[in-house]
Image (cartoon, rainbow, N blue to C red):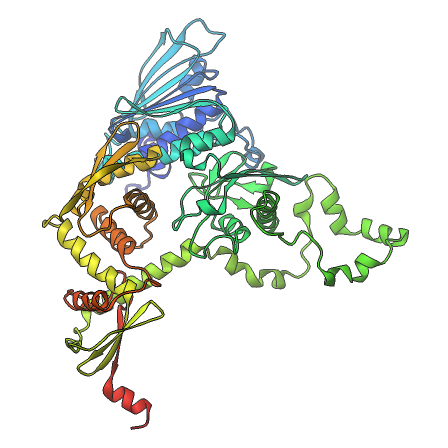
Length: 616
């Protein structure tokens, strides 16, 4: 009987590993940029063609490699940074991952040129499908250039799963920004299809933030800086007026590595309590430095999720540091930094601290853990069950809540579509309508009355209108007498460029003006002029952070964002005529009873139900 279990060939094993590490061009960009940083480079250039599908090239002036190291770098589990298992938990460098270059070489055609300062000549290597095709000496300046061409050329099924060029370029920009933000002392540039998108001169962290996120942040950043034996935190938070309705510019770095953490995000949000609206999110770029042994960065292949030894201390520290910064800059009122009368009256505050008491405190475990260097995380846990009581609320970030809402809304929308449609409601003609709390409209019907939510109803009307326009019947455009110029951050400019055809279909006329600028020549005919710049900025912001479990098309996302943005808001006073038009247009819709996300637009109160309520 033949044996059926066999070892995989190296190139197949590498391709499987590559599936975990290299999911799209942006994954390779991250690995290559981090390796360049680790090589001690002061200049790093990223060149991409065809959104990384045709070429990803990183050129650095770092220390370079010997001819043996250049060859070894592409072997699986080859690394310069790990000698024993303990090193895994002391990692201070960036792209240490052993499979990274082997994975790139398994799914692309790779060329590398490298030279060390002590060598007269450099090394040129060509690798395809994990096999070295060519290795020879070459003339090259000190540093390394790695080119990754034709990603997934040998795994066509994977290539088919890549998104549009604009979408893939946005992912590349995200990874580029995350590395460039963490190392402001290094020059970075990004060139796409021969056009320079980013040119970031070395400077301070504040200068780098403004270079990347735009001049609007220049005078609106508050410095954060706290140091202890256990950890340091530094960086900037945006002043409350920079808060956005969607998760905008939020960057957390732990030991210079970008991470995603709903938990730490919650800590910053709570520091802004009562300074920004509940549905807004603050912007920040914050760095936490602590002993690498207190952090496990190996819980996720891309290292974007990490685990702290003691998360509660980190949470409290981040929150306190941000509160302190906001208070120092007189942005917040006094933030609990003074003792209130109840605390002043406690024995511990009033009575003298005798030698006996000093000795008792100094011998306690708690005192020792906080006074010995790097020991704060060894606080003994006496009441674990009590500590765990409220853990859930820390992890329920606003994003998670909104996503669950979207999911439930979608379910209700699905229910609406499979349940029989309600009988047509007829609003009685020549009957005055009543606006309640500038939010609800009460209208008499042939069988009772309806209570219409003006914002949700208008959202449904606009969604239907934009849907028709986006799928063929283009909306009318009103030309601007004085066209507004819109300047965007590079990543937003790339997104807007991608959205231009869809914006045109719903009545916007926006033209590129060079260097991440656009001119707004016209807006949809039924939108009041005067606020078009802000409208497009908000549209981009909403589009970027459109949260949904359902994969909507780009056009669908855009019209949903547009309907939400342009709908008349709760709290807006309406005339009789405006209310009447709103109600009439609502019942002309295909699904007048729900918004696109499944929320009800009105509630119906029937006459017999009202009679029963009054015991008739």
